[in-house]
Amino acid sequence: MYEWVLRGSEEALGPKHTSILQTINDLGKLAEAEKLYARTLRGYEDTLDQLRGDLSVKQGGIIQA
Image 1 (tube, helix red, strand yellow):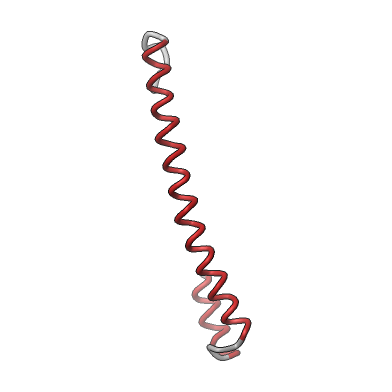
Image 2 (cartoon, rainbow, N blue to C red):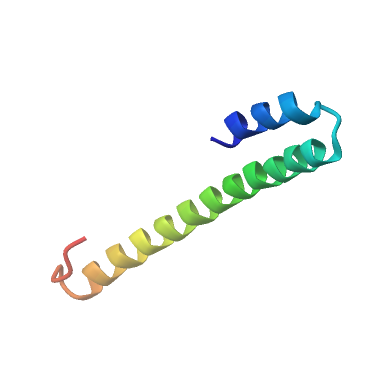
């Protein structure tokens, strides 16, 4: 959706307009932030899965993983 809006804005303002350049910069930051967020989320999920497994063993298998 962002790309669609960006294309329309570029057509209206031109590709070197400061608003367009700022939007491209912001989208680059967003893409990078999404990668970091996904990495963080995977780390938390892996850690929680491991903790859940550890608790299951300590509780004699009572906890369903």
